[in-house]
Amino acid sequence: MSAPNGRIAIGWLVVEDLTMVMVLVLLPALAEALGGKVPGGAGEHGLVASLALTLVKVAAFGAIVLLVGPRVLPWILRQVARTGSRELFTLAVLALSLGIAFGSAELFGVSFALGAFFAGVVLNESDLSHKAAANSLPLQDAFAVLFFVSVGMLFDPSILWREPLMVAAILAFILVVKALNATAIVLAMGFPLSTATYVAGSIAQIGEFSFILAGLGIGFALLPPEGLSLLLAGSIISITLNGLVFAGRTAITAAALARPGVRTIVEDARAPKFALLVQDLENARIAAEAKAAAHKTMSPEELVAHFPMFSSLTSEQREVVLLHLLPHAAQPGERIIRHGDEADAVFFVSSGEVEVVVAGKHIRLGAGSFFGEMALISGGTRSADVTALDYCKFLKLTRSDFDEILRRYPAIREQVTKMAEQRDEMNRKLAEAQAAGHRS
Ligand code: CMP
Image (cartoon, rainbow, N blue to C red; front, side):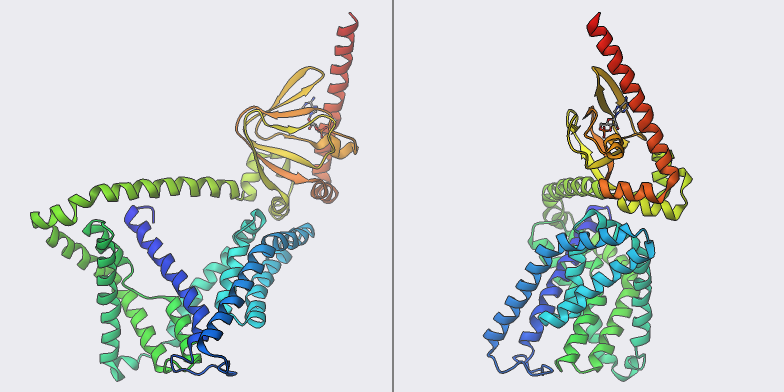
């Protein structure tokens, strides 16, 4: 997954999946023109009209989900997180994603699979949703297993001796036509033969999207029910044979490149183009890593490793705390808190260093410490300026979440109030010393 050729293959698969999304959108509108039957008969409009209607509906649905979703979904998840129940949170994530998928199928007439796709896009948008995604990871495993179980359960082995020629034809299509097609496209784009055959080998199999399409096709009477069995046979056999396909691909590529003339044209002359692509991929990887780091969710163990003050909580309680903490970053010189401002949040420093300025004194706080608690506790305004000294990362707790956490966990309240009192005391002394200094 990190080698350039593998990444091209994954990119290829993503494009295939997006194309499938388009097909899922268009198939209901095109079904009748293709000779199928649409349940409920949407056929009184002409083809162009029903295509246009479908596209408008999908665009409206997409716009609503993408505009409203990123605001509403995190808001709902945050309210649920406030209850402090992890189970309720996971349930809310499930209900929201399935709700969007089902609601869109009912309201907009788009397929359930397409609704689920948009639900995923929206859920991917916010930090809290990343936690939501992390929460549903075990489910992902369960679904991956279910996929293989369902392939097994749907498969009718008798198809192998009832329709051997059909199975062979489908296999030839997947293993040969699809692979040759990919090889030709990659070569036509100016990349080396070794890359082309690698991509071809990687995509010489079919997976779950073909089952969704087949299901839809059968629903519209475009595909006989037998078609699904053939596709399943094609899928199982092509996935099983993939190791062999790769071995074959290596041998064929080596044989072709053993001829110096061929090698110069299809491999060596194309190396610079490949090098450029490798550079692009590397840049994209760096950008993606930076984005992922900003979204990175801490584990309860990491939270305690960073902030020992949470060690008195149980693992479950730490997870609840983690649900409330928002990632925040600052650049060197950035003013994070301004003396005299209203207080809206407390900050836990996970990396970097900040400087607090009180009564002319500069106090440095590093990773593991927190600031911004005094005004929240006293209800007054900020007691000092706080400025980032280098690239800092924080976990931020908003005022209402802070109140909630202190109310819920007395051990944390005790530590935070004690720290605030000590700092208050220190500041009073510093102010007195400063005043004395001025008098003398
Ligand atoms: P707050 O008053 O909300 O905003 C400024 C923050 O600076 C304050 O909370 C404390 O978290 C922090 N702070 C103030 N005085 C000190 C101090 N003497 N030592 C360390 N941190 C301080």
